[in-house]
Length: 288
Ligand code: C2E
Ligand code: MG
Ligand code: MG
Ligand code: MG
Image (tube, rainbow, N blue to C red; front, side):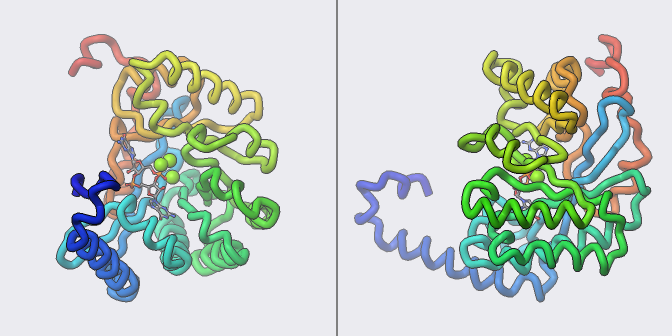
């Protein structure tokens, strides 16, 4: 794959380029078929409240079981779905499925659902969300929609209107991957978000990069000033957890607590209280 990355040599590898176009075309056809074939599944990853140590929400994350290629990562197929507009139908399915599942969870546990900016075209997203709420019967307050800054980048007037309509339905809006866009702060002025999700790139480099630690401090402070929750994504180590706790981050999510798991595993995760998050463990336990 990497030999194709140098643009200057591109034309010498036309057969490969054909192969890549062919692969893309095949993937497109497979994707168009995948919804009907029921090849999609949602996995759920807990968000842990740092004060109580309890699971306060699960984020629904899309998985594609390809008949021959096995599990395909969303990073591989969502961009193509967005390009060909298929994300509208898939996104509607995700909304329906996640709400249908979450309605069985304890009332205090929310469901977080990712929305693509493409779903905001033609204002179709409001109808799709309203339909998922109605058909599942879930309380709107239990639904949190995660959007990225790109939603506010283009057509921001209409999209801000759509976000307001979504808020009017009673749901919550979180800004995902915060800090990775062009002018993140200005978006907070355009729309009153309920939550900031601190991008995992800052969490990952907390230990090595003073800049990351400064940014995390600024973002948690911002959350406090705005009286909204801050969720740190991609928490993998005790050190990161302690750092985030000391900065007053309100929620954490990451492999340290759980990987995204099938719906059947949710009940088991809910039994756990993440004591590690509740009080700092003593040295011996931390090493164990
Ligand atoms: P995201 O919404 O920022 O989701 C977080 C991603 O980080 C997920 O990757 C999750 O599995 C991963 N993650 C969680 N904890 C850790 C950790 O401790 N370490 C590391 N290295 N990674 C962690 P995933 O499931 O591969 O999804 C990737 C992206 O695909 C998501 O990023 C989201 O933007 C998109 N996506 C997933 N499901 C959907 C969906 O239903 N609709 C739309 N529009 N996008 C989706
Ligand atoms: Mg997300
Ligand atoms: Mg994210
Ligand atoms: Mg992300």
